Image (cartoon, rainbow, N blue to C red; front, side):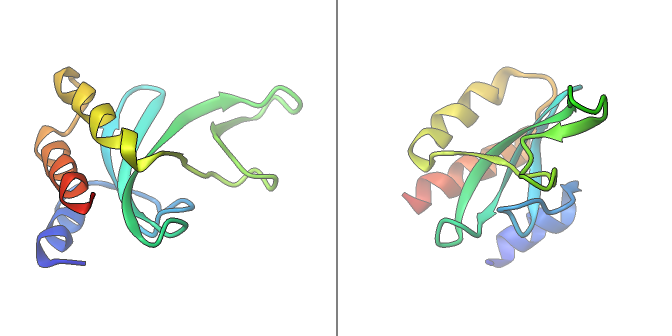
Length: 114
C-alpha cells in the first residue's frame, strides 16, 4: 500500500474488515446502507467498491442482521464490477452522507488503476 493510501486508511473511519476486503474505508454511510472502498482480496488485490445494507430482517428467525451474508450468516460485501465503480462513485458526490475528500481520492485511485 502506498504512503498516500496508508494515510487515508489511518485517518478515516473503517468498518470492521468484512470479506472480501482486508481493510475498508466507508465512503458513504446512510441510516441503512454502506458503500466501502478497499483492496479486493478476490480480485488480484485491486481496489474495489462494495455495497452492504446495515440492517436486514432475516425472516426465518426474526433476527436483524446485515446483508448480504454468506451461508454461515457472516457479513460480506456485494462488489461492484470495477468498470462500473467510477461512475457509481461519481453519483455519490451530491449526497450528504458521503465523505467527499475520501470519495475523490477513491475515484482518483480507481481511474489510475484502470
